[in-house]
Image (cartoon, rainbow, N blue to C red; front, side, top):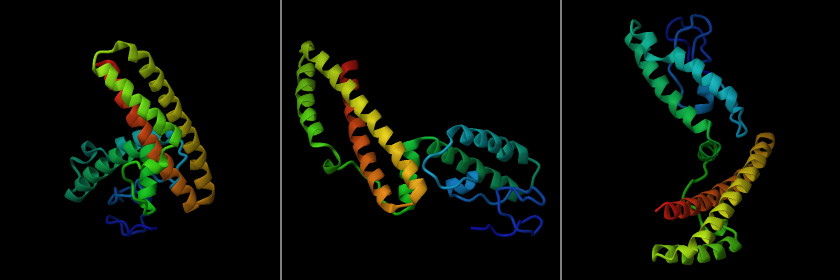
Length: 204
């Protein structure tokens, strides 16, 4: 989608900076467009970081203290979008949720149907061990540590699957792949909550 004409020179401005007069343009809120990236899930994070540092220098409000009120406002808006966009796009989970939302998927709490049945059985045993530890039974600690390690490994497996689905979606743009990604994100959130719960009790 093309921007409006440059506010400064009146020529077509397709990027954040006009290629004719280099004036800063009104920043777009779309994170991918802001960075000049294709909306892919499998991103080059190192390349994203380089773009972030480059843009940070060029849109920083200190560069526009002598500019017009319009330029100062654009700079403030661009700096805010830049930081939000980088925080989201550099994180694979946040990036996937952003793309899902842009495609109309609701991102909510995990649902039990996205969790493997065998994991639910482990959760029952986990809750029993947690209760024992809270009551002062230190013999439950080794089983909780083993459960934590297993959940961390399960989360790593989910991350591997997500990476595969990211590449598949980038190649196909298939909404069914996005639906599978959403299910995996729900599962990952569920497992992550278990890891946090166990680590909190072990540290108490």
